[in-house]
Amino acid sequence: MTDAMFTDHFFTNADGLKLHYRDYPAVGETTGLPVLCLHGLTRNVKDFEELAPKIAGLGRRVIVASQRGRGRSDADPQTERYMPPVYAADMIGLLDELGLERVVFIGTSMGGLMTMMVAGTQPQRIAAAVINDIGPSISKPGLDRIKQNTASREPVADWAEAAARTRDGNLAAFPLMDHDEDFWLDFARKTWIEQDGQIVLDYDGNIISMIDGDEPLPDIWEFWEPFGPIPTLVVRGGVSDLLSPETVAEMKRRKPDLDTVEVPDVGHAPFMTEPEAWAAIEAFLGRVD
Image (tube, rainbow, N blue to C red):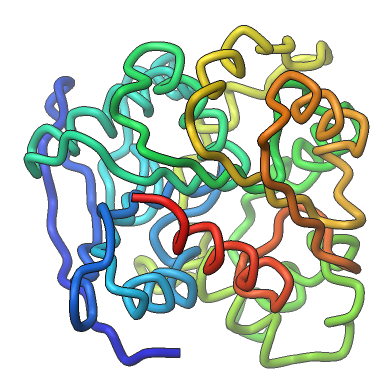
């Protein structure tokens, strides 16, 4: 891993909320367009603390944003706006603020849905895309697990308890890390924060409104169609319960030049620094603008 550093910034979106983002400069000679990294439902900029420097080390500027209600970004008092199309519009606003016409999108889970929203409205902004463990059809078992994981937001007493809670909720996705205490503590520090003398989850509890209810999320295959001319790589966790092999096969049937990679023994969602994922991403970025 390179020692690339980042700077912290904030921008004000169309709703007047201040959103936090990190800017990792390209290391050495610039080799391609910047990369915009988009996290999952309950995550924030810390999700890309390992991946972003690796990409910057390839000679690309990397922008990583925390969506409204996560990390250091403002919570939204109008909770009905916690939806992927709204987040996607925020990211178009960020690109406009930075003067970036086209970038490579890398989206994990909800971030992949956001990328699809952008493809459906402003596909010209997407030079290429890496979609991490999400597709136009979402498997209900995975959605039910996420609902269960987000059902409790009780504070914890210390970082050891935060790591234990993180392990309990994510062991099915990372079974080989069962006894790796450092992994779970690092994972916990990405998803919890010390606040007012307590250790709490680092997101507004209202963000889960998008998955409330018993009905599965609707299929959005119409948002996959614009990816026809866009170079795209899909990363799937080998034991993912959210992105099924059948959905990946259908994505490839509709886009025959789709690149895919599967990360063995990892569920939802890979961090994309796993050897199989990183090798595929490095090769993919080497072929696109």
